[in-house]
Length: 571
Image 1 (cartoon, rainbow, N blue to C red):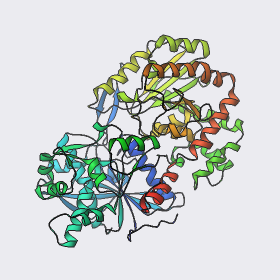
Image 2: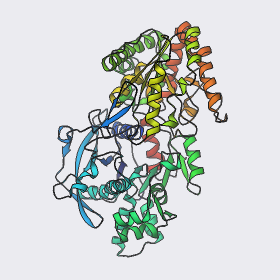
Image 3: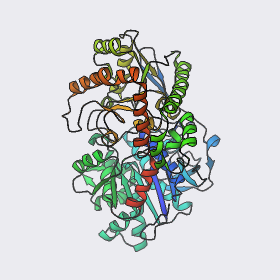
Image 4: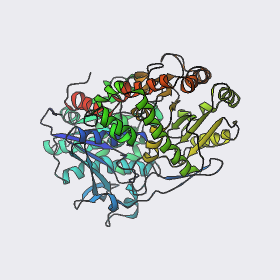
C-alpha cells in the first residue's frame, strides 16, 4: 500500500498503553491491547511504515485464580523480557517531580504476511540509576493509585517521544494516540516547537504545528472511563513549566486535566471505533470533529488452524487481502460444517484440560468471554433460571462457556463472576455452565473458533465497538448480541446472527432484552441448530463472507492511511 503523508511526514508512531504482541507476553488486559496488536500486525501485512510504542509491564496485568464459588484472587504475571524481546542499548531521560528518570526500550518485531516488519518499542524504567519507585513504573498494567498512573502516563507520552528521538526517529512521524493514556506526547511535541522557535510562550501557530502531527482514537463512551488528574498532582509530577504549557493550551476543565481533552485539543484527526460510538462521542465532546473508523481484527491471527487450511484451499490470497473472505460464500456447506466440528473438538478438549469438565460435541455451545464488569452483563443469560431450564427442555440442551477477568479493584465485576458460579448449580442437567479462569489471547483463540454461538450483552450505549464477535465471525460463529457497537453494522437478522431486540433504536429496557434473548433462543436459534443443520451452516458461511471480510484490521489500517494519516479530513 502506497502511503502518502502531508507536511513531509514519513511514517506513524502508534502509542498504546497496552499491546497484545504474543500470548507469552502479558502486556495487555483486554480489547484495547488486542486491537493494538492486531493493528500493528495488519500494518506489517500492508507494509505501512509504522512503529509501536508501549510500556513493558514486567509483572503483566495479573494471573487470575477462581475459587469453587467464583471468588477471584490475583497474583503478578511475571515474565522475562530477555526471553522474548531484544534489549536496545540506548536510553532516554525524562523528568518526574524534578528528578531524572531513565528509560530503556526493548524491541519486538511484528512480521507481516510477506515478511515486512514493524518494530514495537516497550519502554522500561527498571534501570539501575533510577530509584526503586521509578524502577517500578513499568511493572504493572493499570496498577497502583492515581499518582502511579499519572507517572506511568508521563513515561508513555513524554518518554515515548524521547525514546523515539534517541532511536533516530525525527519529527516527521505522525503520532497516533490509541486512547488518551499517551496524550502527554503532545506536550513533548509542543516543547519541541518552543525550542525550535526559541520561544517561552505557546501560540496558536505552535498548537497547529502539533495538531498536524497527531491522530487520536477514543474508545470509551462513558465519562468515568477517561483518565482525569487534579492540576495540583499534575504540577507535582510534571513540574510548573510543563503544567503551564497545558494550562496555556486551554486543556483544563475545572482545575482538572482530562487526558482525552488533551488529546482532542492537539489532534488533526479524531475517530471513534464504530459508527454508533462516533455518534456517542460527538455528544460527549461537542465542538470536536469526531469521525468513525469501525474496529476490526487480524484475521490470520484469529482464524483457527482448521479454517485457515480450508481458506488456503478455497480462497487463495485471503491472508494477504482479507477482503477475499467475501468469497467464502462459495465454500460448500459440508466443508463449513466439517471444519467447525474440528475446531469445536479442539475447544472441548481444551475445556476439559483446563477445568476437568467434559462438554458434549452435539450440544449447542454458547461462548461469552469479556472483561468481567457489570455493564457487560455476563450474567444476563442467567436472569431467569426456570425459564432457561424450560427452553432447554422444550427446544434442546445448551452449554455455555464463560471466561473473563475482573479488575482487582472492581468488586461489582467480581460479584458477576460469583453469580455465574452460583447460578451454575441451579440449572438442570440440560443446561451446563463452565467458567474458565485466566482469560487471555490463547484461550480466546479456542473460544472464538470452537463455540457455536457468540453471546454479547452489554448495556447500551456502553459498547464502543467490541471485537470478540468479529473474531468469532472469522471462524463462522454467528453472534446473538445487543445492537450496539460494531453489531449495528455487522448484524443482518438471521443471516449473520441475531439481535436481542429488533431495531437499534429500541428503548433500553433490560426486561425486554431478556425476553427477546430467551424468545430467539427458543423459537429461532435452537430449532435452527438442532433441526436444520444446513440452514445453520448458511448462517455460519454468511458470518465469514459478510462480517469477516469487512471487520478486519487490514480494512481498519487502510482507512487510517487514507482518512487519518493522509490528512484528507475523514469521511
